[in-house]
Image (cartoon, rainbow, N blue to C red; front, side, top):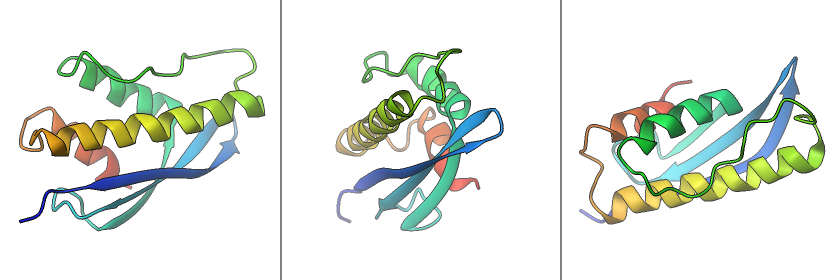
Length: 117
């Protein structure tokens, strides 16, 4: 079996009420995902919750955009978060697959994050 790979893109964001949703697109050949092409909408708070879980097992992760109460809907802040999340998820999945960590318990939360609608 070939080594699993994954690519994440976050092409658009959408303001919904008091929060922003990020449209996360995942393309992968990994059997850990429900499909080879997955689209999910996630809020900053959902991504932050996953990040905190992962930090317990992988203390060295790319930087995570800080939470902000003011100007959280400013386009430059949302764009910076979008780009940072793309880099973050691509690094994370690449690290997991290259180091054969997909069977470790902590990765269940990551795969669940993408597999649930």
